[in-house]
Length: 206
Image 1 (cartoon, helix red, strand yellow):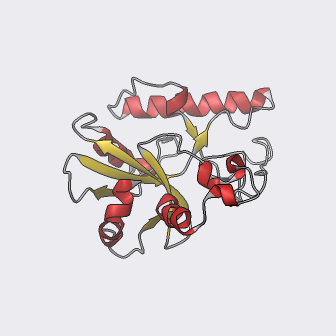
Image 2: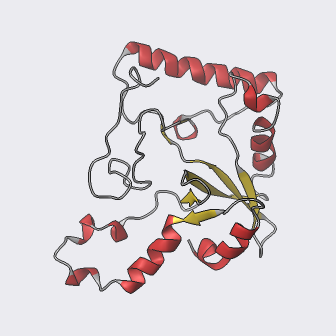
């Protein structure tokens, strides 16, 4: 959060031909400072959006200003993960990106930290855990595993071994199931945190 509030202008200017990305939590800081303390409100503090804590410290939700699409910004320390940006970029480039067997997360942009050359910010689609909502039919589960194995095989055929294929590293494209999106932190709520998020089934919207 601090990183984005300090360098938002530089990040936006680094995207030629685009309006850039605006981080929701950058705006949330101003809201918190401008509003009176929560104890002056009649709401329980737990029912206020200001009480939410991001799930992971290295990722931040944002809105792409050019089209309003919700994206994810992931901070990567290249000293710890020297190949992550290059591998992700490789599978997001032609001709691999257009291959139907490619189930890797697309990479929209890579931003540099103005103060630390060891930090890269990867702008990617905002995704959801693969098992939420739960599978309702055997066919839905079979199709999930088909895509997982197909994606792994595609990576292997292109010289990359995943080596960490576990539940936290398998995500789902949310758009077919959640056309109206959901809150990026409290994901059972809608995006404005004023009600439950509705969704379709995988069978109806595969």
